[in-house]
Amino acid sequence: MDFNVINENGDKVTCDVIGMFVHNSKNFIIYTDNEMVDSEKEVYASLYRLDGNNMVLLPITEESDWDLVDKYLEDV
Image (tube, rainbow, N blue to C red; front, top):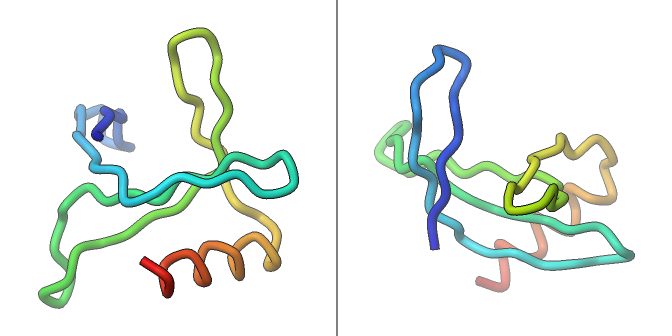
């Protein structure tokens, strides 16, 4: 599964979904834009909500949420 985002330069970037999960009514998405950094793909995580047919990405601000993301990535 993939989706498009507009980056800070106004360019459309296709991102590939690594995984999605729900915890305590929060929707998480983990994804990559396939850009390589030090010979590894850059990986991102966000909270998200659906607005009609659009997915709105939101920042993860709580350390406990980042712990959930780390746990998910360990299990993948």
